Length: 159
Image (cartoon, rainbow, N blue to C red; front, side, top):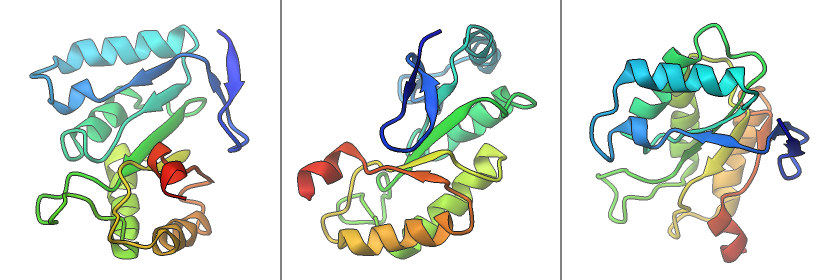
């Protein structure tokens, strides 16, 4: 397997990643046993980067990935995201400091881990200043819950 640097995070990941959107139920039912087999086969072939998000089934994908990686968390990089899918919000987006803090804590529980390797802003909230979002992420980063942070592709456009 070929490995590459993940941006400026200092993390080295497999050139091929494993996306977990589908297990969240967006495209219909995915058999969890088959998902576990796919995750295990991916790890066995050297895939180390697993991408999920709070919005994928509003936590279902993160929970399923945690179950599939049980006992195999070491050696893999988990990237997850927050910031979109909140029906109570007018534009379904929320990147506020309070949301950042709550979402990180919820993702840590769902992923059954003590840290999230890479944490993205999935869809930035245009009503929240970027500084507020980053302050929340830095607060958790200082507690080692998210050792690496990178901006979602849309932040690059906004900045």
